[in-house]
Length: 73
Image (cartoon, rainbow, N blue to C red):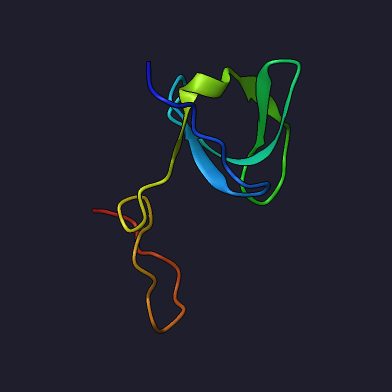
């Protein structure tokens, strides 16, 4: 069994159970507490079910003009 990943507070991680990205809040009573980026309702997941985000693969490129993304046709 490998080491369990321990993120820093407010670090964005992926919950492998749901596929959701959340900000790490803390580990309490054997559960990791995450919240959606920017705030919202927290949820819990087991510590062995979180992983770091892969920089560059989870982010979409920003439009330098600042315009919102165009919907797909």
